Length: 248
Ligand SMILES: NC(=O)c1ccc[n+]([C@@H]2O[C@H](COP(=O)([O-])OP(=O)(O)OC[C@H]3O[C@@H](n4cnc5c(N)ncnc54)[C@H](OP(=O)(O)O)[C@@H]3O)[C@@H](O)[C@H]2O)c1
Image 1 (cartoon, protein in one colour):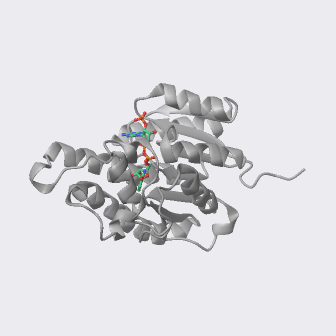
Image 2 (cartoon, rainbow, N blue to C red):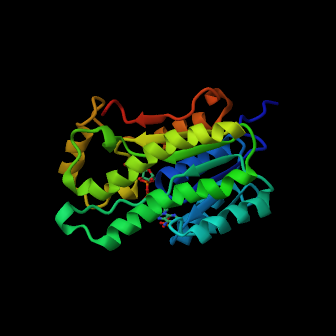
């Protein structure tokens, strides 16, 4: 009998109920990990994700990653149920689009809370429970390196720029504990977040931004996260890995 590569590991995935996070929940569970699926509002999607794995090896926790106390509760719930934490994936993110003149303070604060404060304090709360060989996987965006980016991505790309720096600095800090920190920077990927408000013509144009001429799938991003979560990535840390079919 072959042992699954992540057998015995515990993975916590924020935004693990939909899109890329859901693909990741399923992928890490298929590799043998016990999985904690975080979400913030849609319990139906979260419960469907748990059913697609099994109630024995996965459970859902409603928590707003923009709230430090919620993030603490999320980590506590993980430890209470599975007793440890090996892989933390900060996948939850939001992408409201406004150009400079229309951007409100409220919108800016919300993007920074969910996309920056969330991953940072999640890492802070998780680290005391993690041991050598642990993995932190953050989420950036290929747009940070794409000349095709439009002005309405101002707040979003500002928040993801912070993730790139967080990855760099945390990888140095957490090396003392033997914990590896990397980020994935997806290109356009077919999820609710990306598809919202885009018509066929726009989607075709965006697909043309990479030489493969198509939009990526959540599973293609999950494959790279599974690599980062596994034994094969033990010499990889502090990297922002673009997964985008060659877009940038
Ligand atoms: N899709 C792309 O093209 C693309 C490209 C580059 C980077 N990314 C990044 O990849 C990550 C995943 O994106 P996605 O496209 O998979 O998004 P998505 O389909 O919109 O899914 C977002 C997930 O995050 C959860 N979520 C949202 N706000 C939350 C909060 N405050 N607290 C906890 N959970 C929250 C959602 O749950 P509820 O619905 O229950 O709130 C859902 O499970 C994001 O960080 C995004 O910036 C995506």
